[in-house]
Image (cartoon, rainbow, N blue to C red; front, top):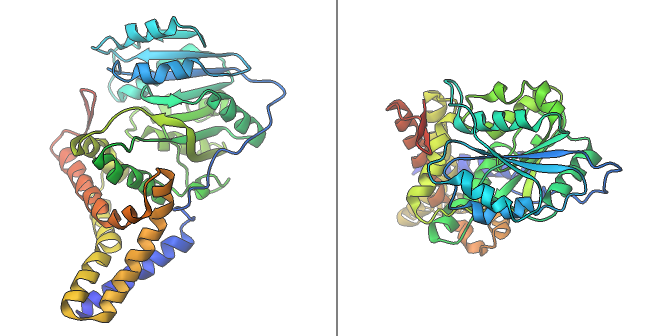
Length: 379
């Protein structure tokens, strides 16, 4: 019990430090502020890579085409060799009016590129000398003024990259359990305040909605600079910031994912396909992550249970205090997703699932399956 007492104390101290000194990662107040309209609205090309997305396009593409943007804007949908009629469906949806739509396909995928980034590169090349590029996904629905709001924020703040993390669905039981934690863990890895601070080494973006200046992208080496990245959004933000660009990342109010994850299996694949890549395929970082997750998220629950069973008030109190701080930092994210605050107490269970997903991601990599997505596997 003495060992558990000290481990519980370390867990509590870690949570106090995380809550107070880790960029206030748990707060949800990093939102796109209202900005005055620029004197001249710059031109924008929206690039949408799409592979076998016929099921979600009717729920996402019409809103993108209906953007109320005062300047010149157009949409380029890159059909990445789909087999479900994605390109034909997109062209049909484009006939209903709105922003001009061009549907195209990239050349065959070369070695060293991920499919999404190869499609993005093709779309960026077709965009030409536009002022801004909005890089988004085929499963993302956009509010009617989103494009104008992003451009206004970039122009007023002198930003080279503006990104918003899309709200994922929380309709099924598994979505409600795992999705808010997914965003919470991302913010813990990349505190938004630190990422938004000029000169900070932290840089992150959300691939579902990223507005970037064309000149800043070219200065960073273009899409080719991150051509093999599985976690392309974070690597793009790093490349832009490393070459002197200013970036901003926040939570969205007009950006929503329409992709359903009704079962645990779909959510498991969403997380595990990139978890080991996040750790740079390092067994040392994997071991450290597993131990860290266990210490921070699992020890408080074990301490409460063991303390109550063994009659140790000190162990129970330390574990309970760590669990309380943990849940308290998760409450704002639960509220952002419209969930009741008591569900924050389930975070240790969810963290245990993420631990297993991370280990599974490494196992799949070691088996040569890498990050599998849409029929492709990246080693």
